[in-house]
Length: 169
Image (cartoon, rainbow, N blue to C red):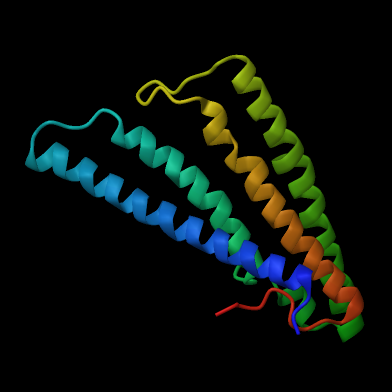
């Protein structure tokens, strides 16, 4: 029987996957429209490049969280490959704790401060006219996911759980 927290993480994982795939599909459609309007219609859209940039920010940060969950980030294991298992475990704990701390300080704390500041200044994007706070909101949201996945894997290191954040398919 699956625990309540397991069900919550499964739902969060599924929702994040759907968001990343949906945003990526929207990004592809936007870029294709940009190319078609520029070269086929000879009337380039003024907003497509800005939208593509904003979508790329969201896809990049949420995709980084998915990559962290799936252990798909590049890692340099040259140094740890020759270590004893206990030293490898210590290195993994250090890397996960450092990742969580970085995400909290930079993405969550710094990202939230940036969102608050841009909302207070009423900063709008030039072409689309949307609040830049919506764009920058990707920082704390992506940071929350990355911190959660880092802490979850960190807890698994201490409790020797092997099934944390494995692909849910």
